[in-house]
Length: 140
Image (cartoon, rainbow, N blue to C red; front, side, top):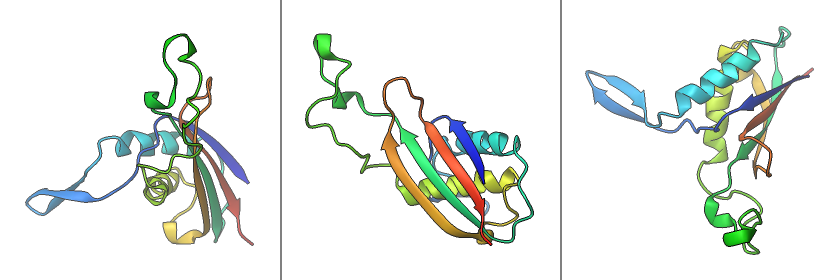
């Protein structure tokens, strides 16, 4: 098992837009730096020549300021603050950009080798940075 901890803002790989002459570009400008961060971290590890892999990712997202109280209690969560980020970005689109970054970093040769995929989104706690903890396992 290889574990990678990526610091940065997780970005979803969504739809592309047509810019003319048959060229398509990513809709989000955040995808490229997110994939680059994953690739850089993956290149620091040695992955086996595994024919099948399982990938599990925990995406750590920043809480909106509206989840916190105001005034002298500004460091405390509001009572009605949600526990999980059931909002943008979609977890499946976060996985798409993450798998592309892992592939570029040599974790596997093709996304088709990923036969098991698990993911979750959580909010970061105070003192934590947004990012992702990614585990890549060989499937035997």
